[in-house]
Length: 183
Image (tube, rainbow, N blue to C red; front, side, top):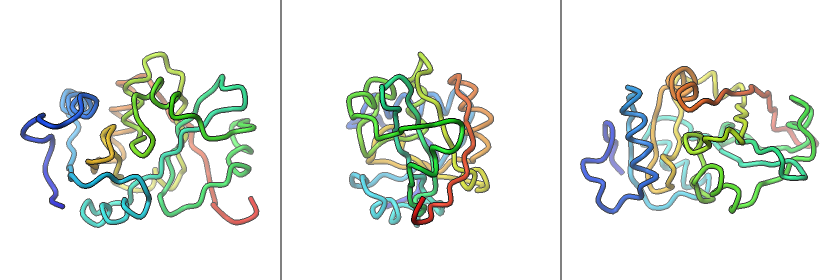
């Protein structure tokens, strides 16, 4: 894997949704580094990519409440375990479970294994609330997929939260996840 500055030289062989991410980042003046790789749909695969990017790739979980009336995208450090009960105590979130692949496609235009904060650019109806573990916000950079799991990006955390999210009409709720057993 190699590390590149910015978008690929050619859009050939790339999905439109990936190119739309690069178009938006470029339009917003957000600088990023990119690496291309085999499909990365596990945290183990992401750990290898982390070494190239020099960042910790976030674990991104697409969640919903029981009656599927609210959807959430949770960003958390990839090495931190997720405990539903722990999250439920914050922001009045209750009875959360993983949302379906169909809902992920419908609201974020992303398939399982590719979910990232970049998908919020496709949520024009603002049906998805972003939840961010406070540890993500402490890092200068973080890594994510550009709507496909065959490339990964390294972005300044402040650019995502101060420029990207306002541009796509989203905000973030901060959560504090310990990831300890028994939660």
